[in-house]
Image 1 (cartoon, rainbow, N blue to C red):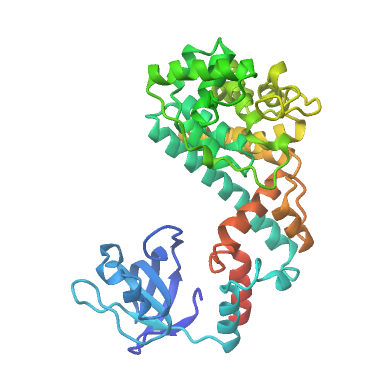
Image 2 (image 1 turned 90 degrees about the vertical axis):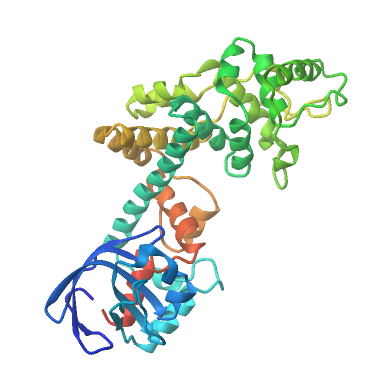
Amino acid sequence: MLGLPFQLETGEKVRVIDPGVLNRDAGPDFFNAKVKIEGRVWVGNVEIHMKASDWHRHGHDSDPAYDNVILHVVAVSDTRIRRADNTEIPQMRVLLPENFYRTFAYLTSANCEIRCAARLRNVDELRRADWIETLTVERLQCKAARIEQALRNSHGDWNAACFLTLARALGFGLNGIPFEMLAQSIDLNHLRRHSDNIIQMEAIFFGQAGMLDPTLYPDDRRYQLMCREYKFLARKYSMHPIPAASWKFARTRPQNFPYRRIALLAKAMADTPDLLQRIVRTGGDEDMLRPLFRWEVDAYWSRRFSFGPDCQTEANPPSLSEPSISVLLINVAAPLLYAYALLHCDHDMKESALSLLTGLPPERNAIVRNWQQLGFSAKDAAASQALIHLRKEYCDRHECMRCRFGHLILRQEAGF
């Protein structure tokens, strides 16, 4: 549309000089656009709708953020739009081929997981690589934004933000939210006072997880000791556990139950309360980062997946596997480095966070496998993170108009 001749419904000639900046949040669709109407240049925001009446249906008529819209672009002009001061907003109707509307309706429907799958093989490699690279950065930015929110909630405590990030990552997807709830329920200052006593550390974590009940496992001495310790510590610090029903066990092997991972989180906070500082000091070097995540649970957890005598299993390694550590580097180390770099204006550290992802193997999960079946290979973690982000933030949310692939397909249908 850039530079092409159009006209308003009232007949004035329109030319788009600069489309402005795409807005991905609340407010008009494009900020700081520049258009020329009958020789006069206007600078402001642009709003786009399928139907002009969507302006009222979306509540823009009562939102001051839309008072500075200089152009309303629609496909169907079923009403005229005015600002709060009753001045009419210039409205431009764009006529598009019937194929465009059919494709748009199909792409934004919910009849399959990835609606443009049949057309993706026609997207050239250069466009693919460019969008994948952008999505990698976008995913890191989203994770950094979550860390920044944790920082605000903790009044700027980087260790608390790191604790929350690590806890969520140890949930490995299925139990990510319960692990985050668990971390939010624990005061780091309390942990620091008991970091030299692993029984008390585990008592705090398992107690806050809602997993300690003194009426259970009377023959498990360690479990009963944790129950007594938690009763004392909960009263001392006025702690209240999260709902035990928060934890997910369905379709999960016993070895992947959250118990050992909670024990590992307790061990991590006992051994490396300054994990954030250690991560930053590595500068993103993978060989220096991996040892930071090799915490070892003690012998009690070597042959069990839960509490009690009936939860025995074959011997388990005391620490995480190397693939699991890779997952933590992807979801903990890289986002923390990126967030820290953003807030400290450290360009080199930002690049180190991205380089860390390109040096790690790609994740192996259902989403990545699905993309591979469609011809999108992931050679490293940066690419697999991009594909995960594309699926979760665009495909699953029907955000085809924001996706470069969807946008390209629609442009082709429109003849642009």
